[in-house]
Length: 388
Ligand SMILES: Cc1cc2nc3c(=O)[nH]c(=O)nc-3n(C[C@H](O)[C@H](O)[C@H](O)COP(=O)(O)OP(=O)(O)OC[C@H]3O[C@@H](n4cnc5c(N)ncnc54)[C@H](O)[C@@H]3O)c2cc1C
Image 1 (cartoon, helix red, strand yellow):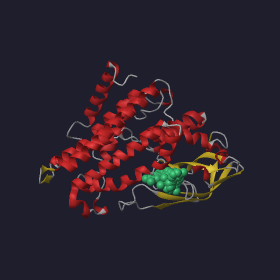
Image 2 (cartoon, helix red, strand yellow):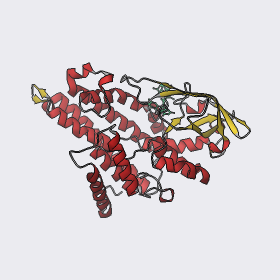
Image 3 (cartoon, helix red, strand yellow):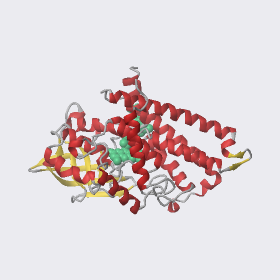
């Protein structure tokens, strides 16, 4: 198994580094939440043809292989710039459209996803259907050229800013619950949709919402795939979601920043980095992060050799979120008593310092729930990886 980069891959890595450096040179890095930085980066990515870096060429993407995508994600994370500006549409919906969408749907929806002019949210979870997603009850009943949709979606990230939602709905009651589910694309401006904010543990309404659908009319040509094929579309999509949740490059960057912050934090040993207890915890998480990186590279090598990531993506998701959470805990230890004075109102996006670290710690608790809880990932690993 080949785990090191070839000369061509190293040349590609240098090209990526030069591109990032041309727009955000060291020391003049990305300021999160800053609109002018976002616009500048979006323009640069579109001009270079790298905006939809995960997409195949026939749909206007880069056509990069999995190693090139990995290099891009790693280099952007290490430089602190986003790998992509498009959210769930770019990452999760587009692959479904490539595989299950009609030519007309691809033509209609992909351009807005690629240039990030249309924001999408994911309407899967419901009050009684999270881990057991097949229990979802939001109904879509055909009526002429439309479906009439009634129900409630929960934990819908970015619904409050989304233009559209890709949504799982129940179109029939089948013996196997999965067979009665269809995949709809719903315009969030449709009459009958109400979005209610959910304030999270960090005291902010930055992401989560509840979405009510009452008599919402959705044209039948906004169904992706055949009626009853929604589960098949969603399943492939969840593997994409979990493979993207190892956060290795992000954690590497956090680790470097943590070491820097700890080295400046006075302690009776000189600084916190020299404190034996803190240093031991830091070393433990660093070792686990190295192991995670090797696991990610191993998965990459297997995928490059033509195997699907499948259940192994659950290992990446599980370990990736645990490492990320432990790093955010160490940041709070580093902030010490200052962390106690956290006020959500002060935690403006992109503001440097401990307030952001405390906010990351708090919202980071949800990483082991979102995208399928860690208990569910352990179950998948036990059954499908270990064969227990
Ligand atoms: C930050 C965040 C963002 C999210 N964004 C979205 C989004 O954009 N769109 C969307 O559709 N959903 C989203 N979700 C919802 C997410 O997918 C669900 O929260 C998740 O699938 C868990 O479902 P649940 O919350 O209903 O918990 P439940 O399924 O009720 O689980 C409760 C607890 O029981 C455990 N449990 C449940 N079943 C089992 C089992 N069989 N074996 C062992 N333990 C079990 C779980 O691990 C968990 O600890 C988001 C969630 C979070 C936290």
